[in-house]
Image 1 (cartoon, rainbow over the protein chains, first blue to last red):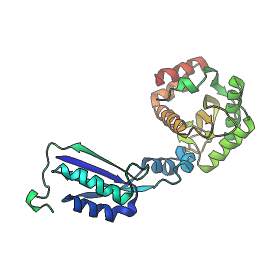
Image 2: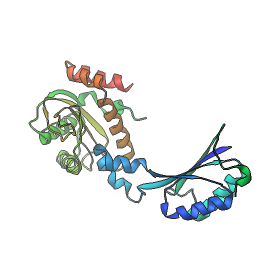
Image 3: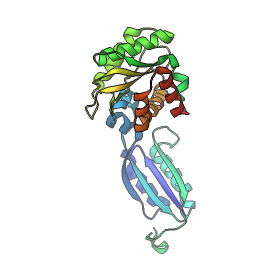
Image 4: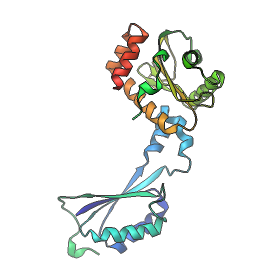
Length: 115
Length: 152
């Protein structure tokens, strides 16, 4: 069982990304409004105000999608679909996806009810 | 990780620096950098630092300030750490005038390094024990040692 974390910098793709989640077999996910560290420092902390020009082209806000994945085969499928949607996660500024092991959980959608 | 020793020449640590206001303090610190190792264009550097101050003041609060700039007036990244003879206003959020002023300046292509150094300096200056020791240091040599010890 894994926790899949996806920080999606291109928020305009959120709908299509979630469609990819469902298509890949992810039964549920939590979407969190999030913010990049660079934007926060440059705009909210006065001593870093001089670094605003280095933020040009960066997306200030992003979405973080959290999901617990039982069947790890889903992750490969999802990665491929998400790559198609956002144009490749290897491109800087697109998003960051990673997993961490989960050794216990409760409250997940029951396996037999998964899509 | 960026080490302060690499960017702060002990000759650029000074105490009892006299300045009546922020601009004079910045000029005095640029002069210290220029005297220690030469600055390509001190006047341009002062202008760029003042320009950066207009964007948002660099007073951190607790009597500290970190004026800085990316500038074509200096060839490599350098720091100057000064304790002023009398504090001056750097627009700090707590309205306390700055007594400890650290100037950081370097070329425009060093944004990553500058972020690391500024973060390190801000963290150092937020430490109440360090500030008290820096304010009490009897001379520049002891102040320099305090800074390098805190950074090691």
